[in-house]
Amino acid sequence: MAKLRFGICGLGCMGRGHFARLYQNPRAQITAVCDANEARRCGDWNDELGNIDLVRTRGGRAPLGGMAQYGTPAELIADPNVDAVLITLPTVFHADVAVQALEAGKHVLCEKPMALRPADCDRMIRAAEKAGRCLMVAQCLRFWPQYTLIKELVDGGRLGRVRHVALRRVGSPPTYSAGNWLLKAEQSGGALLDLHVHDIDFAHYLLGVPATIYARGAVGLSGGIDHIVSLYSYEDGRFAVLEGGWWRAPTCPFDMEIMVQGEEGTLHWQSSAGPDVHLHRAGAATEVLTAGGDALAAEQEYFLDAVLNNRSVERCSPQSTRTSVVLAWLERRSAESGIVVRVTDRLRAAWTEEPANAS
Image 1 (cartoon, helix red, strand yellow):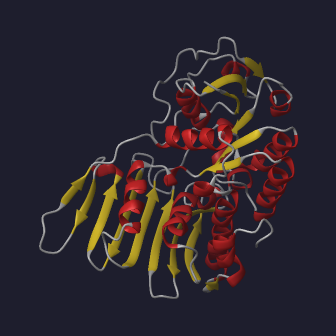
Image 2: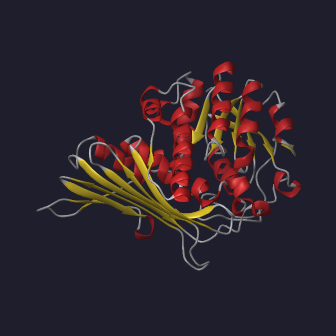
Image 3: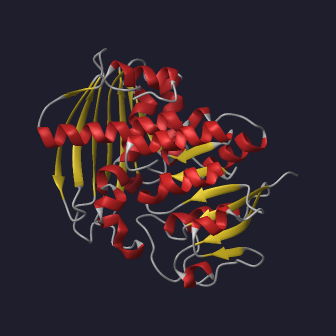
C-alpha cells in the first residue's frame, strides 16, 4: 500500500490531534515533527490542552521513534523523507510556511484559518498552482459528523426550502496556547478569525456567499474582535445568524450549535446536549439521527485520497477557504463601521467559478 510521508509542523493541541490519527492511518507515515519547544519535539507532551478533547491521550511520552525532530519548519521542509507538510502552527506563520513547503515540492495540509489576510491566501494558492502540489485547508466542520449529516439532509431536500440558519460557537478565553499566541490578535486574528471562522466557513459551504453582511462585535483580551454576532442576508430571502466568541467566564464550558429552519422542518444539534442530531417536523415524532465518525480523521482521509490518487480537493478547495477569510474581514469591516457591507458580485462569482485571482 502506498503511504504518504508526513512532517508535522507544530505540536500543540491541533498538532497532537492530527498526530494521533495519522499515527494509526495505514496510508500515512509520520517521518518528521517540528516544534520550537525542545521538550515537545522530543515527545514530552504534558503541557497545554484545548477547548475540546482532540488529542485522545493526554500527557506522557509521544511515540516518536524513527521520526526526525526539528526546531524549525525550514529544517523539516528540507527533509527528503517528507512528502507532505501538515501545518499546525500559529496562524501568523501559515502562509510563509505553506509557500516554502509548496515551493520545495511538498503537498500541504494546513490548519484553519487559511491565513490572517486574503493576500496571504493568494500567495498560498499561487504557490500550489505553480508547484503542481495539493493545498488543502483543514476547515473541519466540512467533515464534522453532525455538520456533514445536516448538509446531506439539507442538500437532499429533507427540510424543503431553507429559510434561515443559526450557528453559534462560544467559550472562555483560550489560555492554553504556547506563549499565549491565541490571545494575541496579531498572531491569531482574535476570536473572529480563529474561532468564529468555523461558522463563517460552514455558512457559505451550506448556503453560498451572502449578498450583505451586518455585524456587531467587541474587542477583547486578544486586542482583536473576541465576540461577534453577524447577520448574513441572501437575495432570495434566506438569512443566517452567526455568533462566536471566547468572552465567557473561565468556568463556562465551550459549546457549539447549529439550527437549520426549512419550510418542512427544523434540524438542530448542540454539542453540550450530546452527539445526536434532531429533526423536527410538523405532525411527526422527532427523529433522532445518529452522526458518527471523527472529523480530523475524515479530513485526513480526504487529503490522502486527493494526493495519492491525484484528485483535486473540491470539498475543501483553497479558493473556498480563502472566501472564509474574506468574509471574516467583511464582518470586521461591518462591526467597526456600524454599516451593512455589500458582498461584491466578484466574490460571490468566485465561490462558483473559483478563479485563482478572485477577490
